[in-house]
Length: 483
Ligand code: ADP
Ligand code: MG
Image (cartoon, rainbow, N blue to C red; front, side, top):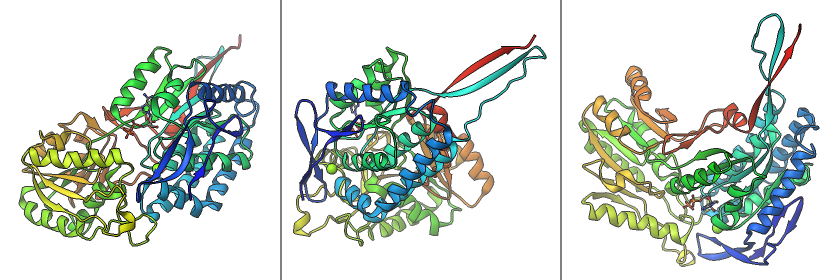
C-alpha cells in the first residue's frame, strides 16, 4: 500500500522544489510505507514565508479574536477524534508502536487541542501597581513564527504538544516531523485546514534534520525554535539559534532513575517499573531505565521483574495481542543491540532477555528483545548513556542517602520514579532528586494539564499545561502616565 505524500506549505500540498523524495518505512516489516518529499532550504524558506505572512497580516495572530482561535482549535480536536482510528493505524505503521498505545496518543492529541483551546481565551496579563499617577499593563503577545522540530517516538503527540499551545498563543508554525515518521503530521495538516485554520498558520516540511530542520535555525524570520530530540542535536540547535537570539525550548534525553524501596507495594512497583522502561519499546525520553532496588528485596524484585517481562509479547503493532512492537528504524535497531553488547562487555550480567517474533511476515522487522541487566555500578555506560530501547539496568542500593546520590549521579535530569509506602520517604526523595518530573508510586504519566521538561542536560524550558502556552508568548509592559 505504498503511497506518495506531499509537504504542506502555505495551505497547499506540494512536492519538494528539488523533486527529491525519501521513503518512510514500516518498522514491523522493513517495507516502504510511503514516498515523502525531501524538503530543503527552498521549501523551508517558502514555509517560513507563509508562516510570516500569516503572522504579520494578522490572519491568525492579532486581528483574530481569541475565542475564534479557540473555536478553530476545538474543530481541529473534533477532526482528530473523527479520524482517530485511521490516525492510530497510520501511526502504528509508521513508527511500530502497539495499536492501543497509538490510540491513547491520538486521544491525548485531540485533548491537547481542546485544552489549549481553553487557554486561548484565558491568557490574561497583569497590572502591577506603580503608584497613583500611572497605570502599568503587562500584556502577553505571541512570540511570532515558530519552528517546531519533533522526534519519532510519539510522532503526532510530540507535534501537537508544540503546535496546539503555539497556535493558542497566536503564533504561526512550521512543523518538521522526524524523517522516520512524517505521516500523521501531514494528516494533521489536512485536519487543521478543514477546521478553518488559515493558510500559513501550520506548515509541515518533511525531510532530514540538517536539510529540512537546519534552515529553521538560521532563518531570521523564525522567532522561536522548540525542539524535542537528542541532547547532541539540542546543543547544536541552541548554538545555531544563539546567533540570532532566537527563543528556544529544548526537551532532550534522560537516564531517569526508578527507585524501588523495600516497603513498596510490589503489586504496583513491579509492573510499573517494567512498563516504565519497556513501554513504547523503551523509546521514551523519560524511561526509568536506571532501576535502583533496595538490597533487602533485590533478589525478589529482580526475579519478579523477569517474570513480568517474560509476558511481554513482541509483534506487529497492528496485532491487538502485541505489547511491544519493533523499534523505529534499522539504525535504532543497530544502536540498541550494540548497547546490549556494551553491557555484556562491561561485565553486567543479563538477568532476562525476551524473544523476538518468529512470524516470517515480520522477518524484516526491527524487533529487539527486551533485556534486563544487573549492574554493580552506576558508572557503566549502560547506566550513564541514553539507550532509547527496551534495556533496563538494575543497580542495588543500601539507604536513602545512597540512592539519592546515585540517582543524581547523571548528566540528565528529566524524570524519576519512586516506589514506597512511606509518604515522608517518598517526598524527601522527590525533593532531593534533581529532575523536572517525579512520579511517586507510578511511572510515566504525562497529563496535558501538567508539566513536562528537564533539569541539567535534559533540556531548557517546560512544556504542557500553562507552561507551554507561556513559552510561546512574549510579555510587554504598557506604562500609562495618568497625571
Ligand atoms: P534521533 O537521533 O533519535 O533520531 P534526533 O535528535 O536526531 O533524534 O532527531 C529529532 C528531530 O531533530 C528529527 O526531526 C530530526 O530530523 C531533527 N534534526 C536532527 N538533526 C538536526 C539538525 N542538525 N538540525 C535541525 N533538526 C535536526
Ligand atoms: Mg516510518
